Image (cartoon, rainbow, N blue to C red):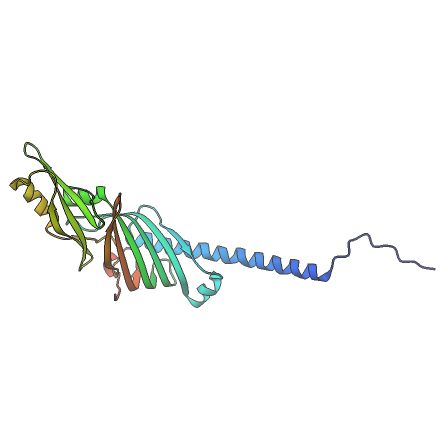
Length: 248
C-alpha cells in the first residue's frame, strides 16, 4: 500500500505569503517614490541655484506621500528650501542674504529644470549684523529692545558714538530705521553726518526672489530676520530680471 512521504518543507499559511508579498510591494513602491522625490528636490534646487546665483546648491525637501502622484498631477503640495549666502544684487548699498528659508505651496515644475512656479510662498531672510554693517558703513548690533538695533559710528581723532534705531518694513522690500535715539558718546557734527548717511534712507533687500513682499522685520542676537510672503512666484535661471509675480 502506497504511503505519501512527509513533506519536510514548513507549511506556510497563505495569509503570511500574501502579507509578505504586500510588504514587498509597498517597500518597492516606497523606494521608487523616494527616488522620484530626490529627483524633484534636485531639479528644484538646480532651478533656484541658477536663478539666485548661490555658490552652493540649496537644500530642498518635498513633503507628502506619494510624491509620484503629485508629480503626475504636475504640482508638489509643499516644498521647504534653505539657501545660504545669496550674493548682493546691485551696487547701491548691496546687502547679501546670509540664509533664506522658503516654504513653497503648490509648486509647479516645467518640462525643464530651469523654471519653478509656486502658488504661495512664505520666506524668512536672515541678515547677519556683519553684512548689514558693511552695507551701511556703521557697526550694527542688537539693540536693547525687540525690533531695535544699535548703530555705532567712529572717526579718527573725533571719537565714537552709538545710537539706537527701530526697524520697520518699508514699501519696496526695504528696511527703514526709525525712532533714532541718542545712546553712548557725544553726537558731534561729523559723527552725526555718518549716522544720518547710514540710517536716513531705507536699505533695499534685492537679494530675494522677486514677487516676495516684506511683511515684518525682527532682531536676534546674531542678525536681522525679515519675513516675506508672495503669490504666484516664478524662479527662472540666468534671467533674474524676468522673475515675475503677483503679490497680495
